[in-house]
Length: 235
Image (cartoon, rainbow, N blue to C red):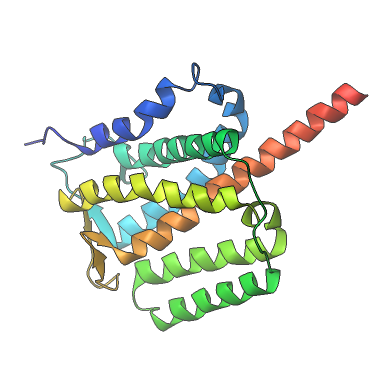
């Protein structure tokens, strides 16, 4: 028997507010749909493939009482939509931040980011027999290596860190629903077993890296196309 509060409703709740105000709110979010959906396509495709791999491997699986029978690459439709609704909503948060809060530079040291990336590699290797743990650690390692290599424009921004802080509020709410209702089951052999309420600790690292990658690609294309537009007008 399917439950009333299913995964599809959770997806709808995530996107409802930013979608409602995409065309009417001050920031005119719809004007950024081109870089937004470019980021969703690139980063979302990678994470969907990763998700399909770990689901196939048995790191986690889904409670069929909370999902529809529709699936793509072995994942419920709702899980695919998760990788669209979440970045749509979270980058909406970021755009509101940049509109209402004046940004400031924060200290940035590329060697510190290389060092932190190396630490995540070591932690991942230490728990290499826990499949979800190592992938979560390696995704954070990759993020910090990119931060050291080409990410100064984002990681030196105070609004980036505020974006992450604010995005973790809905993350905790909705992930709590997914894990407390047991929409998603986790293989105990694939994780540390440490939970914050009902949320596996690895999910916090997974979410941090994922939301950062979405924003990184979004800002890259937004800035690139803005510069191209300015150059075209100048010519």
